[in-house]
Amino acid sequence: MKLALQFAMPAELHALPGARDLAPIDTVSGVPFYEVAPGLLACCGGVSKVNAAMAAEILCLRFGVECILNAGVAGCATDLPIGQIVVASEFVQHDVDTTAVGDPIGLVSTVNRVEFPTWEPERCVELLRRQGVSAVTGRVATGDWFAVRGDRSRWIADTFRPTLVEMEGGAIAQVCLRNNVRFAAVKSVSDHLFSEKQAEEYFDFGQALESLGAVVLPLARQLQEVEE
Image 1: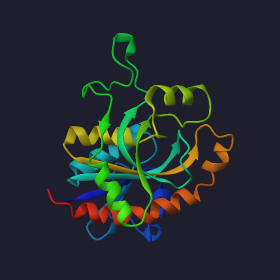
Image 2: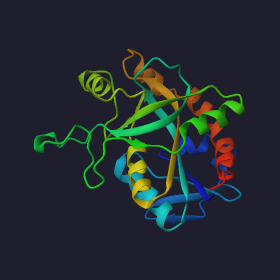
Image 3: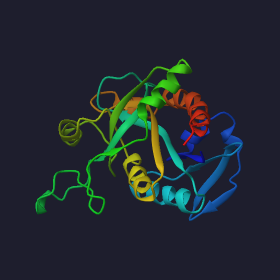
C-alpha cells in the first residue's frame, strides 16, 4: 500500500529518527515533501485546516497515495497522560456551524456528515501494542482555533465529547474521503485543555514528541504491508 505521513509542524517530522537532516525531494505549492524511509513519503503541511487540506490533496493527486497517516501532537480534553499515544477513531470539525439553516452542529456540507471515521483504528492500536506501545482510541475534534482553557473549550468538550482537540486531522479526513483514500491518525498528548498548567505543558512538549517519534515509522511500515 502506498502510504504517506502528514505532519503539521517541522518539529513533529523531526521527531522521526534522522529526519532533521533530510532535504526535500520536492516542494509543491510551498509544501516540502521528504522521503523519510525507502518508499515512504512525508510532508509538513502546515498548521490549520486549509494548509492541511491542501497538502493532503497534493498527496492524493500528485503522489497517488493510497493511505495518509496523519501524525502529530494534540491537546487532551480528558485526563490521559502527556505522551499518551491515541489512535483517532473518528474526527469532527468543531468550528463548522450551519445550525442557522437547520443543520446539526458540526455538519460539513457537500459531504453532508458530522463524523469522519478513520481506517481500522483498532488494527492500528493492535499493531502499536505489538510494539509494546500503550495506545488507546478516541474521537478527535478539529478546528481553526488553538484550544485553551475557557468557555469555548468546555463547549467543544460538552458538545462533541472528544478525547483530543487539534487543528488539522478533520480536514485531512475530509480530503481522503472525497479522494477515496484511506486515512489513519496517531496523536501524542501534548497538553491538557482544562489544566492551569496548559501553556507550560504545550511549550515544553518534548515528551509528547519523543513518544510520537518512537511509534510513527514502525506503524507506517506495518500499514504499508497491509494487503488490500
